[in-house]
Length: 96
Image (tube, rainbow, N blue to C red; front, side, top):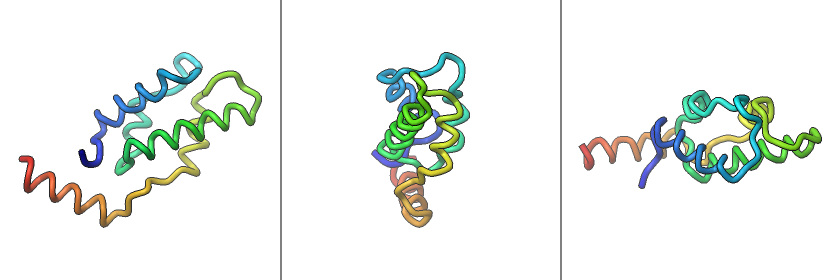
């Protein structure tokens, strides 16, 4: 399947967030998708679960933008730059 592009990451995030309590209007999916270049779907799941834990730790009932920002500061993608490059090159050479 490869590494999701920005649009695909946005769709993945929406799917993940559909099963979470999220403060309405506080989480900008497009912004998160833009900041998570090279993240796999599993990485995005870890990101949002971490945001959910951040919300619990602060005593909140739902995930807010600050919880996601904090998670973005700690959750890193699982793929190295070299791995991302190999996958992108393969996609260009085989799927174009």
